[in-house]
Length: 239
Image (cartoon, rainbow, N blue to C red):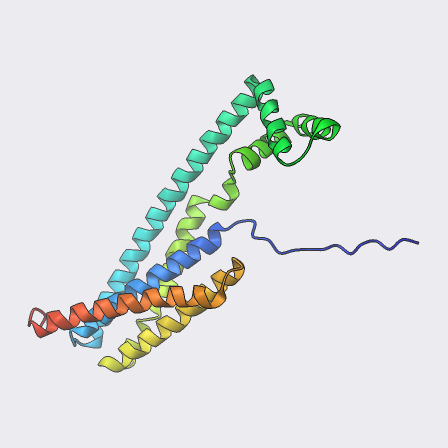
């Protein structure tokens, strides 16, 4: 009696666009709001002004990022589709050339003789398999990884708002530099968490990824605070 080998299921990311949109949107949102809050707060103005400025910047930034992401993903998909259309035409009109390319691909993988002939015949006997092989092996293309333009736009918009609202929350409950300190701490901790999760999914250093993303927020906050303080000291802002 033979015992069947248990199925080994490994988690793989079949589509990276969702993670990409969330990380970029959240990071841009939290850094934008934190930068505005720190910059305006550095001028020692009321919390109402800080909230208003941050909300305007948050929604404006979210809309701009969503539109830009939509256009970027759409353009990339159109470029990939044109490459796919060209590959389909070549398979239909230059099958010998495309078959030779399949042979070269699998020769480089170590196939030869009858094994090579069998693999090439098997692949070229099915045009869908043939096309998929050319796209992944020769052109390294994967439309699914790029994502859907409309979905990417909404994901970017939502992630930007989620990240953007966090640094603003403390200013609804307090005034002065206390809510600013809380906003910086909240932004750093959540940024670190998102960066760590992203790195874990990518199987890279969790600590490095967290510190990298959190450090960007810190830099923006310090720059914004410094600018706001200088403008306040110079008397250019009097609220």
